[in-house]
Length: 118
Image 1: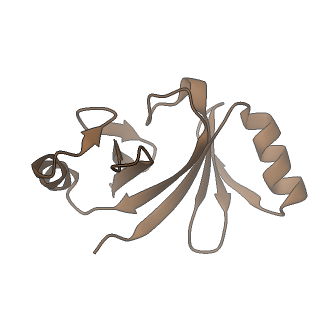
Image 2: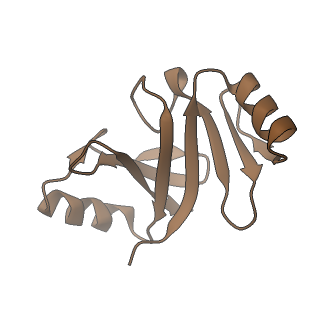
């Protein structure tokens, strides 16, 4: 069973996004991973803001919300997704601040990610 472990929001401007989510919605910045990505405190489920045009984990110019699912073995997960002919955004897992990530689409074009924490 898949477990949502992170919600990522891809935005056109990280500074404006941080200002909105902290000032208007009351979130707190937990950690800034360079100039284009930040984690906000949201109970037990982290909220990640990432500037879309320079994204390391997802290669697309569109904006939106992406659910990240937790996996203990990202390579095995990729193998299983390939058996179901899932469309990947990147063919191999990539490094990200908490570990490894792979981005893929559901049959309707919605983007999801699997993350293996290291």
